[in-house]
Image (cartoon, rainbow, N blue to C red):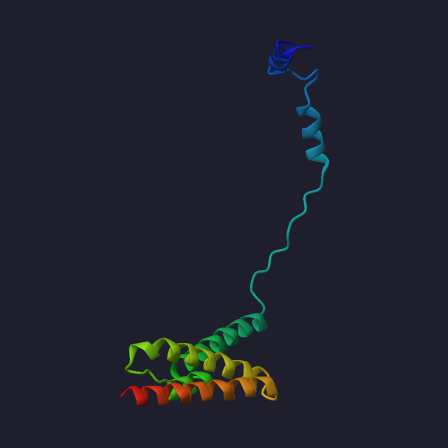
Amino acid sequence: MNDLDYLRQMRSLNRQVAPRRDLWAGIEARLDEAPVAVAPRHRRAQPWLMAAAIAGVALLGGSLGLHLVAPTGSDALASETHWKPTDPRLSGAAVELDAARMELTQAMQDSPDSAALQRLLLKTERQRDRLRNLEKQAG
């Protein structure tokens, strides 16, 4: 068989073929016999579901409002200790040290007894103090 024979066979498959018998009568008869399941209707929602939804919305709104008004511990700490040197050569290092300090304080909230995190925080503070001394020496 060559390519031309394959093309002829494929073209012959593209014809419409009528079924030997009408299938719709059997399908319709089966549909009439099948029981129809009706979903039960609830006329009113249960009161405790409504109360739970209202309480959830109120709790979510209150927590969002409280979060927007009062800074969290790490945000308050970061805003108190934010320092920006006047020398542009030192400002990039100051930004990196502030970011590292904020990440370490957030990590310490998850595990406050971690000695490794405390050492890293102390090391970051020392680097920041050295950077401040460099700024003072640069004048």
